[in-house]
Image (tube, rainbow, N blue to C red; front, side, top):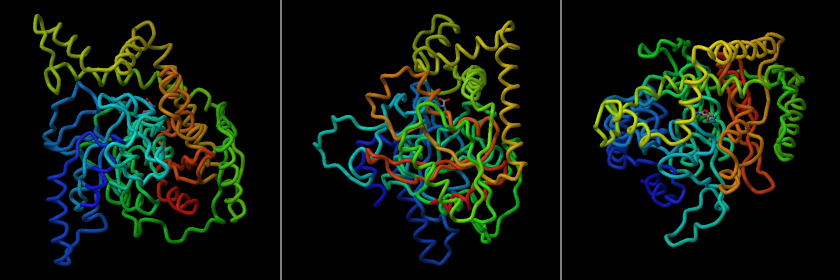
Amino acid sequence: RKCLQRIRKTRHLNAYITVTEELAMKQAQEADNRLLRGEALGPLDGIPFSMKDNFCTERVETTCASRMLRGYFPPFNATVVQKLLDQGAVLMGKTNMDEFAMGSGSTDGAFGPVRNPWSYSSPYRTLSPGTDLDFDWSITGGSSGGSAAAVASLSSFLALGSDTGGSTRNPGSLCGVVALKPSYGLLSRHGLIPLVNSMDVPGIMSRSVYDTAIALDVLQGRDVNDSTTVHVPDSPAPLPQEFDIRDLCVGVPKEYHAPGLSADTLAQWTRVASLFERAGARVHEVSLPHTQYSIVCYHVLCCCEVASNMARFDGLQYGHRSAVESSTEAMYATTRHEGFNDVVRRRVLSGNYFLLKQNYERYFVKAQQIRRLITEDFRRVFSSGVDVLLTPTTLSDAATYSDFIEEDNRTRSAQDDVFTQPANLAGLPAITVPTSLSARGLPIGLQLIGQHLQDRKLLAAAHWME
Ligand code: GLN
C-alpha cells in the first residue's frame, strides 16, 4: 500500500506506463497470508518490484513505449517475470522507457519523458497537486529510466531493466541506484522483446548490492526457452563470504579517459581507485586499445539486428494496425509509419543499408571483426591477473531535459554509452554503484566490469565499494 501510495504521489516523474494496482494488492495479500502462516517462500516474498515495459507480462499490456504495441496483452510471462512471481514478489507495474529501448535518456517514448527524482531537491520528495512542474528538470538517463526512477523514489524495491548498450547502468548511475548488467547468458531473455539479441540482457536495479545479489540468485540459470542461457551452480550465499580486498586486482583502463568526462566524475574515479589501493587491493593502469571503435561497432551491429527484429511488427500479429486497407503492402507500410517513432525508423533504415549485398562485408562483417578485437582486449587484461575494471559509468551527472533534447539524437547516444557498451559487445558482467553527488547535487556512479560469469566476484567488489 505504501508503494502504491508513493506511485500516486510521484506521478510527476512519469515512471510507470501501467500500474497493476489490483494485481499487486492480491499478490501482497497472498504473501501476507503466507508470512502469517510461517510459510514465506524466500527473501523476495511480498517484495514490490516493477518491470520495464519491454518484458512480456501475462494479460498486462506490454508496449515498449511505442504506439506500435498499444493494446498488446501478451499471453505469457517473460521467464524473469515468472521467476519473481514464483518467489512471491509483487508486481507494481510496467515502467516507462525509450521506444523499443533505443536511447539513453528515457525521453523518446510514446508516453513522454521520465523525470529524474533527484531534480526535486530530494529523490524521496512527493509533490502536492498544483505544484509548479515547469522548471528545467534533469533526465533519468535511459533507456530503462522508469525503472531507475521507481527504485530511486521508493515506489519499488527492485526493478528490472534491459541492458543492450548500457540501458540499465546509465539510468542507474544518473538516478543514484545500484544497477547490474549480468553476464550474457546468465539470465533468460525469453519474453524480453529483443533489441539486439546478441547483446541484450535483463538488468537488475535496487538500492543495494546485497539486494541485487538476492535478485540475481533468483533470476539466473538455464532456461529451455533461451538456448543462450548457461547453467551456474547454486551459491551458498548471495555474496561470497570469504572476500578479502587485499586479494583483489583492479584495472583502470587508460582509454576510458574519454573526451567530455566531467571534472566531478573524474575526481570520483580517482578517489575510489585510491580507496581500493589504500585498502590493500592492487590497482594497475591497463590498456584496452580497441575501445575507441566500440561505439561505431555497436551501432552498426545494433541497426542490423534492429532491421531484422522490427520486421515482426507488421500490423497483423501484434498491437497497432492501420486503418488503410487498400492493399496488404499499404497496410504494412502505414502501420509501421504510424507505429514507430523516427529513432526506430532511422535504425531500421540504417540496418537495411548496412546489410545490402554491396555493403555487407564493409559494415556488418567488419563490425563483427572489431567486436572480436574488443572482446580480445578484455580477455588479455583479465588473463594478466586483473579481477575487475574500475571505470566511470557516464561522462557526467544527469543533463537537464532542455540540454539533452537540443543535441542530435545520434551524437547523444554515441557519447552517453562510451563506458557501458564495450561490456555488452564482450558479454561481460558490469555494475554501477552510486558513489557521490556532483556539484549540482545529482548522483554520480562508478562502474566495475568483471570477467564472464564471474558475477559473484564482481558483486563482492561492488559491495566493498558501496
Ligand atoms: N543507448 C543505446 C542505444 O540506444 C543502448 C540502449 C540499450 O541498452 N537498450 O542503442
